[in-house]
Length: 352
Image (cartoon, rainbow, N blue to C red):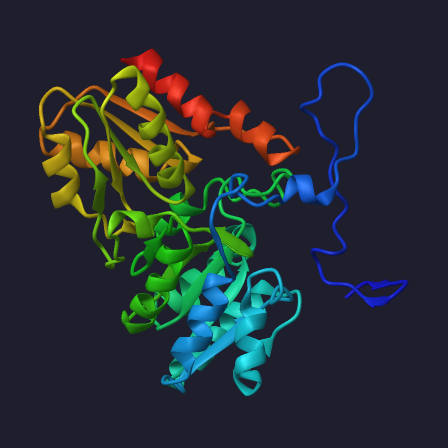
């Protein structure tokens, strides 16, 4: 661990904000960290603090086999809440994701249910082989909760997990979850703890938006949920793009465009029955929206389901491009890459 003027610094505190490459001509500007890891909540939007950490601490009261493990990122994955509630069941493994995954596998072998946290890039790239060989192949009861999924960091490719869903979808035995908001996370935690086998869950941290409580929503592992109906467009979405899709649906009502939103929090196993039922309704364009590269994620998984079943609506994808993404302020990047609510609305209107 590096030593700063006030003592040891965590890995995130040591990171230097990257240069904003989206400023165009003129001198390059050094961005404040807050602009690069800003909350995904819109101004004035309702939020809940640390839904993952609080849900896990609450669950652990009656589940003594649950342990929390991290790779020097307890504070930045909200696992510090669990650490405070259950200090004797909290393991700080240092900056070594491979060690974290191997130790989590060992804990699972001994009957514990480890929740291992790190950043999504470190789990999906740095520790992939350890997860594959020591956790997934053994079908062990390890739960991976990984922060900064997709484009939720402006630090550039080293911290933008644009391909994590594709990687973990391809791993046998692995269940893959992409929650939308604080409610989704709170309800997913006990569900994945009860599931036997490894789980990879994307993690939203800090003050997380709260939107799904307005839609009588309840998380069910392996189930997609139709949040609202509409006659013109069906948006099939996961993660924070479900939140954006709901914003788009309200915006396009003013143009008399009816947008249905089907939230798919479980990427694997995919709820093919619900997807086929909704996509088979005639007259609707199907748009898959995800905070992930268009390669190998929910979009291509959905396209495969539709084609194999002979269902062929007009089909479009909203997602991150197949390229290394720029560093910069998140609102700028989201609009540049087409995943802001405004950019999504423009795309959908242009396709109709």
